[in-house]
Image (cartoon, rainbow, N blue to C red; front, top):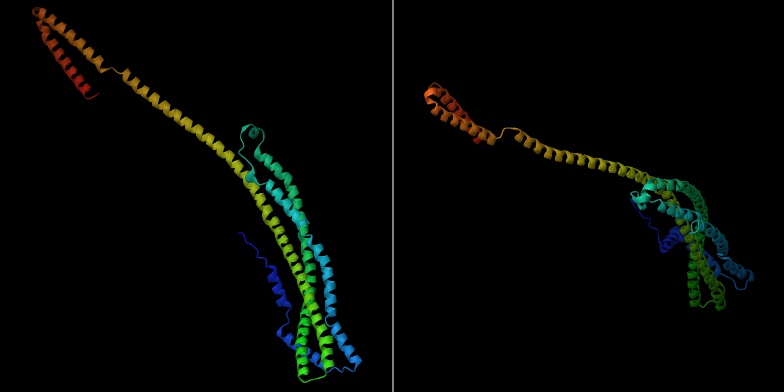
Amino acid sequence: MAFSLEVPSPEAIKTAIEQEVKPVPEEVKQLQAQAESNVSAIMELDLDSFEKRKEILQTIEQFGMATMKTSSGKNALLQVTVGSLSKAGDEGGPVAKGLAELHTQLKDLDPSAVDFAKTGLLGKLFNPLRAYFLRFEKADAVIADIVESLSKGKTTLKNDNTTLEIEQAALRDLTKRLQKEIQLGLLMDESIEKQIEAAKARNEDPDKIRFISEEVLFPMRQRVMDLQQMLVVNQQGIMAIEVVRRNNKELMRGVDRAQNVTVSALKIAVMVAGALYHQKIVLKKIEVLNQTTNNLIAGTSRLLNTQGAEIHKQALESSVSVETLKQAFADVLSALDSISAYKQDALPKLRGTIEEFRELADTGEQQISRLERGHQLGL
């Protein structure tokens, strides 16, 4: 049964990452409290104290910087790592090459493309099944090497994915830290802006309001923008790792299918092709035998028809025919007539034998009648 794997779109992956690194409500409350505390310290700034101003400016300058540097270093390493590991799964990688080579071998050994019923001179000189199996035996060793290579490639891909999962987890943690710092910066920005408006309404020191606006709020917003940019870079890194991992998984599934399904299907196809070829030979012999049997039956029927008619004809011809009998009795009657004439001439002398001849004539007449009746009945 065929199935398809639905791969999420980059937008879906990005949305999932954003939801994963987004602070939960409890963390938002903690950030809110921290933002209020930080803003209170800023608004209570004593402009006359150089140390206090320097401390606040350094705090703003260092805000999120550690996470940004760590993320930048991690992304630089990932660029090398992902680029190196992804080569194993690209079009020129060993696994992809092995799958392509296996496809070529299987296509050449497709039994459906072989004419096992080849006739003519070539069919007599070269047994198509024997030639096919010789080709299969030669390719079988090549296929075994390809499968072994694919197995090693699958192990490499699995190890690569383990490395990528570790790197991806580290990058996710950094991204969560960035998201929290961005959230904290936005909350502080909102709170400082409100405090500035309130200070203006109370007509507080304009220099203090200007200092907080220009030296605190402005660089804060710049840093939040930098953190947001780094967040996007991290998200792209996570997405890149995810794509490579998914591609590797697909390649590993392809290797499994090649090892467990495709090669087995090839062996079964070869076996079935051989069986069907031998069945075709047996069917051909049965066909020839049936044809011979039919010819024997037809010849015997013709002999029975011809010879049987001749036998009946001969039987009829070997019997005494009615015409012969008629002629015989006609001859007898003629003889009797001659005898009768002779009797008339010899009446004076042969009166004593008249009755004997009459009896003989009566008997002959009865025989003739019986024969005539038999003739009329078809005997």
